[in-house]
Image (tube, rainbow, N blue to C red; front, side):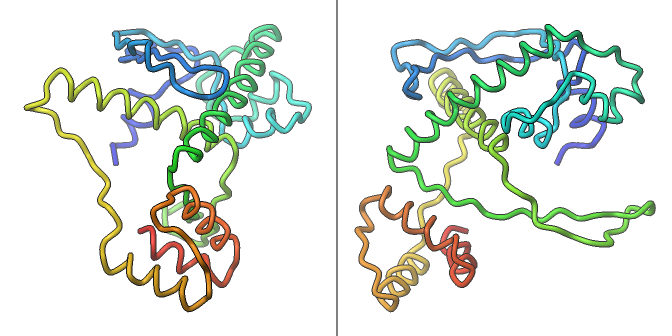
Length: 230
């Protein structure tokens, strides 16, 4: 984890502030597939974000709630830093962009699943802390559609960045590769499916993905699914 002053301030896309960045431009077709004929472009850039949206606020916009630009100022960040409210026209552009981006990333996710990607939604735990920064309670974090929106774009950016680094400095590149399912867990999974009379083709990743997702929705199975994929 990065120090908070870095992650929440210096290198964060804060609203109405210039931030130096390394940007990647790529092209996606309307069916959600990546245009493989278009060479991704990496370049130095300056990003000036227009607004700071929480995942929850962005989700409310996607859910067609009656959100106005003034609602953004419920966020303490704006009040503390004395930022000026954005105009109605700018807010409408943000809403349109968010909705279009969500439609596109839904298609990207469908393409990824159809290609055999294993999708397991592990639940995250958040802690409530008191004034002394000591945990006093905890709760399960709700996975929103806006989380998936960001996730899909991050996966594409990470993939293209890794390919760019590897193709340009192969001998010096450090590429993370997720390990395959170890033999013990693989055998445990086969035994579990057999004991529960579940017939599945383990070489069909899409079929395996759909079955694990189905099992995870059942309380009695969600912890065993987490064991298989961790």
